[in-house]
Image 1 (cartoon, rainbow, N blue to C red):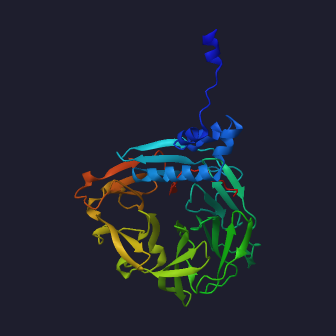
Image 2: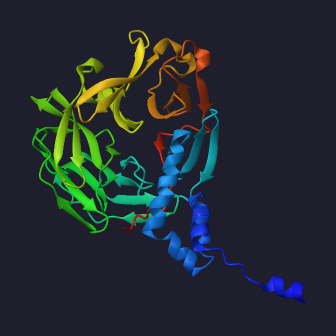
Image 3: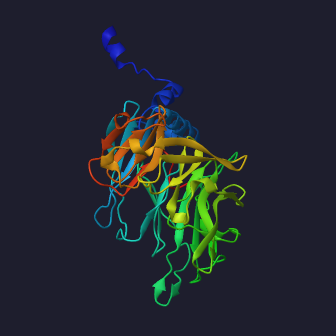
Length: 382
């Protein structure tokens, strides 16, 4: 009888202990656990838990790197694969996310860099924006940016967008979009609109400063600021005064940073930008193995408004089987810099003296995009 009574006793675990356990679980498991009880669901949907879980996930980035693989897929959907690179150089296929459905044909789509698990897929012709968190399957279609502007029977498609989060006491997520609303190819035709997720409306922002935005490069987000490339176009052909354009999401103001001449480039599409070691970095898009001795990554010192070399890797040490490809740095783990192209991940560091110092991880299939990605509970509806 006593044994039966003991079996019938419910042992309630304090909610704070449950939360500590939940913080370390993947998002897919957390979504399932919401069905356990109303109390658990309320705890996991709170902003406090969302923030704690996100901080824990980001704290793991020093010893591992998480990516989302975005392959070219059939019309109407995109299938996303989550990859994990660990400190021992092993590539793991962590999980396959549910496909993002109900998309127009792939042609004309761009994909923004991710911010706290959210990223934006948008079409440069229809100007339809999809805000997505693949880990939670949260999917939101945003209101029209602007009525389509038709010039000589063609819709303008100079457009680039990026998502970020304000660096403030009560941060908000915002989408920033630069575009041309006319057919002029001059230095004053760029327009800027901002979409705050909690307002559900697009609105114009004064600026940016005179100059053209580089529409063919994704914008980067770091510490509440959206970064992109800009330049001045002379005689509709010659590029001058290349800069990094910074837009503060909280104050909604612009500033520019000159690009170091030491990187030696002529056109803005010769260089790329990324976030590495919590810094804005620039590097050459293509490496000439005949003339370039080192593959250099330049980091921006925002306070000093100067650039310094973060990494310099001997080009001759890069394995010949991956030469000829455009490679881009995407993370650092244990002093290794990890590069990617469409087929593989390449591990290298400044002290590399021969090809055997490099680690190469082949991916299962070619993919046009590898994007740094951290799983979070952040919803596309804020």
